[in-house]
Image (cartoon, rainbow, N blue to C red; front, side):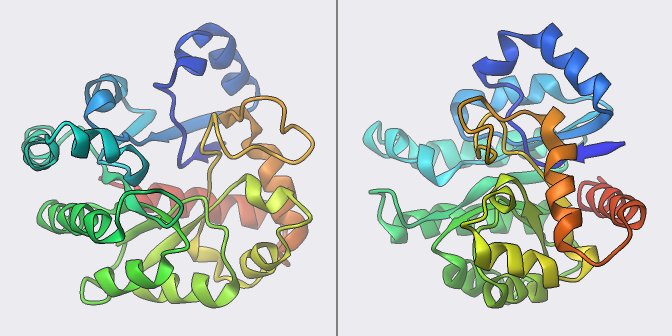
Length: 257
C-alpha cells in the first residue's frame, strides 16, 4: 500500500474525472492521501474531503497571498484560518500548505509574517507543518530553530542539496520526495535523497503538478507514486520491501493525528 503525502485532490483535474482516478488509485494500491489547502478559496473544499483515507490540512500558500493582499483581506483571512483550524481540530492533521517562495513578487517580509503566524498556529494545536520552500531554506530554519520538536512537519517537494536537507531534518522535519528525483538533471537532489536517514523520507506527487520525467506532458497523479518509488529504490541501498515499509510508517507517523 502507498501513501501520497501531498496531492491536491480538490483541484479541477481530479474533481472532473473522479471515477477514472478512483479506479487508478485502486489499481495501484494508493491507500492514503494527504490533501493540503492553499488559501481561503479552497478551505471548505479541502474540509469536505476529510475522511479515513483523506487526511487534510488548512493553510495559506505563499503563491496565493497576492490576491489577499490586494483585497486588503490578509489580516482577516489569518484570523479566519485560526478560527477554522480550531473549529475543525478533529478533522485536520496539519497546518499547510504554508511557507516561503523566492520566485514570487510578494515581499519575503510579508511571506515571513504569514508563515510565522501559521507556525504559531501549528504550535498551539500541536500539529505538523506542511511547508513549501523555494530557495528559502535558511529562512525556514531561522523560523523553526526554536520550535524543534518531534514531528515538526515536512518540507514537501524538496529540490535542494544534501546540506540543506540535513539542516531541515535536524530541526525535526521530514523531506517530501516526489517527481524531482525522476529527472537525471536533478543530481544534487538525487544525491541528497540517497544519503538521508530513512526515517526522514516520505513520498508525494504534488499532483497535478511536479511533473515526472518522461510523463511531463500529462498531469501528475497519486497513482504514479509506485513509479516515483522505483526511482527512489534505485538511489537507496535498502531492500525495496524494507524501504516501502519504512516509508509507509514515516507517512503514518507524520499525519498521525
